[in-house]
Length: 110
Image (tube, rainbow, N blue to C red; front, side, top):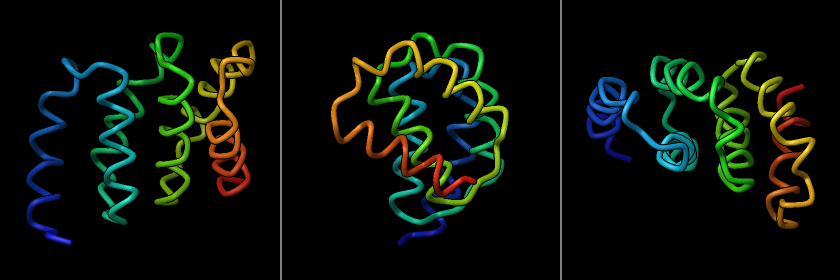
C-alpha cells in the first residue's frame, strides 16, 4: 500500500513529532500498524515522544498506541511499562473494545 508514501510520511512526521498531540501520536502509530507498514525509526520516535506524557492520553489513545506497537511487533519494553502504569489507575475509563485491544497488545508483546 504505497510504500513510498508511507516512507515519506514517516520522515515528515518524525521531524514534527514534538508538536503532535497525544491523539495524533497514537493515530499515526495505529495507521502505520493498520496498513502493516513497518517504520522502526518512526516508532522509536513515537515511543520517545509519548512515554513522558502518557498521563495526558485518553483511554482510547493508550489502547491504540499499545495495539499499534504490538501489531507491528515493534519492541519497546519501556513504552509498554509506561502505558501499563498510566492505564492501571484509569481502567474504569476504558470502553470494552479499548480493554480488549489493550490486553491483546500485552498478550501479543509477551
